[in-house]
Image (cartoon, rainbow, N blue to C red):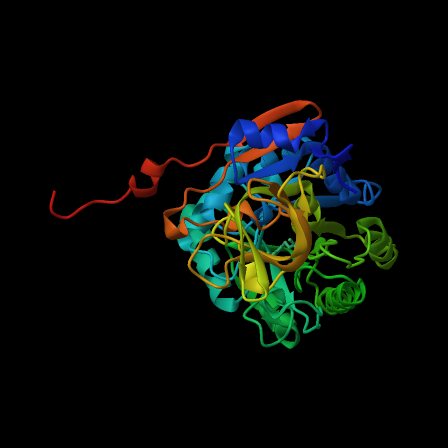
Length: 418
Ligand code: LLP
C-alpha cells in the first residue's frame, strides 16, 4: 500500500496535490512519500521484531540524504556498496555498527574507512577479497568482521540483468567451495568470521527461490558448525519484488513468516537488505507533455522527462504505470494509445509504449513506482540537468534535492586553451 492516489480528479501524494508540486518546482521531478517509506520499512522490521534481526536498507535503491535519515531514525541499518554510500549514509546520521558492506570489488581504501568507522560486517565475495581485507585490517590493527556471500545457484526467475545467484553470475563464492573458503577466512589473523550471506536477485515475485537459497545456506551452516566454524548471523540480501503492473509479489510478512519458521531453534540473527520493496512504490516521477505527434499510425506523447532521468524502461524494458496527474477533461485532448517518450535522440528513450491515455500538450503525467532505481540511476546525458527530488510528509513539502543548474553541468570541466 502507498500514499499516492486521486482526490476528486487530482493526483495527490499524501495530503499534497501533485499539480501544486509541479507548479512550484517545475518538471520533471521525483516525488516521494514519507509515510510510504516508513510503512514499507516497518513491513520488514515489525515482521521480525520478535527475533534478533537487522534490516539493512539496500541504499543503492534511493540514497537521498533525507530518505536515509528518516529510515535511520526508524532504526534501519544499511547495505552499502561503495565509499560514496558509506560517507553519504554517515552524513545522514546512520549508526556505523548497523552497516553491512556488499559488492564484488571493494578497494583497499574503502575497506580501511569502513574498518575505521566500525561497520557491522563485510560481505566478502572471493578469496582474493579475503586476502585484501586481511592485509588492510592487519596494517591498521583492526580485526574485520566478515561474512561470505555464497552463490547458491538458484534460479530467481527474474530479468537476467538483475539475477545474481546463478553459478554463471559474477557474484559470490561457489556453493561447493564454501567450506574451503571459510577455512581459509578463519586462518587469516586480521579477520573474524561472523556470518553467511546471499542475494540471489532483484524483483523476485515468488518466495520459492528465496527459501531454496535459505535452505541451502542453513545446510552449509550445519556443515560449518560441524567443522567448528560458528556462524552468528544469516543475511538473505534483498530482492523481494513490487507491483509495477500486475505482479503479485509476496508481502514481506508472508516471506518472513516462512523464514522465521526455518530459523526457529537456531541461534542466528537475521539480516535483510531490502531496497526496491521499501522505496519503489514510495516514489513517482512527474513529467509534462511537451507535444503530441503522430507518425504513420503511431501516436507519441513527447514529454520533458527522459531516459537520463529514469532509465529502467530503456535499460531493462521495464514496465511502469503511467497515469494522468489530473483526470479533468480539457479541450484538445486526444484519447488514444500513446508511446510516452522523452526528447533524447535515441529510440530507447521511452517510458511506456501503447499506453491508453487522454492527453493534450501541457498535461502532466506521473510514472509510478519510481522511488527505487530512479533518481540514483539518472545521468546528465544530452546535457540535461538532473531532476529535483521532493519529499512529502502529510501536508508538508520538502525539496530534498534541488534541480541541477546548467552551470553545474560543466563546473568540473576544464578547457585546454583558456
Ligand atoms: N543486496 C545486494 C547485495 C544487492 O546487490 C541488491 C541489489 C540489494 C541488496 C537490494 O535488492 P532489492 O531489494 O532492491 O531487490 N537497477 C535494477 C536493480 C538492481 C539491483 C542490484 N542489487 C532495477 O532497476 O531493477
